[in-house]
Image (cartoon, rainbow, N blue to C red; front, side, top):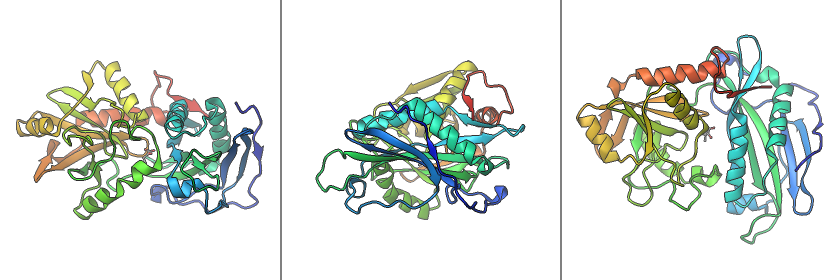
Length: 356
Ligand code: COI
């Protein structure tokens, strides 16, 4: 438990901010960052907000060798009244601790983590962009920094929060993306680290991603690691399908990341009395639904990706064109509602937003 106040060292200079209408994902960073250290014996200590800067880390630090690290992604939005609000930040802090547990990293105090995020956003609030579809992406992460080459949990860590003003994650924006189903490589297996948000899951996805990008696809859709039959997730988003009026999404099975936007979509659909099931969904089932015309819509959900319609799925030599490559009615309604709540344009019956 950290019950200390956060030391603040303000930057003496301010960087130029990118134009709100030209923002891309994750290329520019705000003026300040949060840092806090952990060492066995002292626990988490020395929480500070300091000017954004390079880190000085021993080359033997364990993060460089064995990848013991976790991260999160959440966003701050500017409302029409100029207020700034976060979307379900407590869920990100809970998930961070869930990932910590899997990676044998000491837990952080979730309330304190939220306080750190709020203070950092408040200090850099001029970085929260105001153009349509833009936001301030917040990236909390923890790295192991004990200099030691033995394979063991580190005795020292750094918890850091950086922030980046962003536009849409995909170059397609809210337009449908093309996704290729991966048949050779796997992202995760049950009992592995698939449901933790740790860098290694993303590093192992790069090979397949590189191959499909050359063929004109935005991302890879991963199948289960054992039988390569059942749909898991895209890596930067969870997936939903509307088949014959019913919405289905892969059930969380231990190798799929429990997306916060995924959870919000489920809550919304249940609130609207739209039938939605979390279960195993095979690629064969999807293929058959496509062939008999009952695969009505497909979309992904994620913090970075928001709601991203899927216009084409490539699987085993078959190009499954979905809803004529257009954004479906339900995908649009979910996108409008979630972003409406995030930007304070519509009421938030779920208490999802937290003012800074
Ligand atoms: C997010 O949606 O925040 C993610 O973590 C996906 C990401 C790897 C860009």
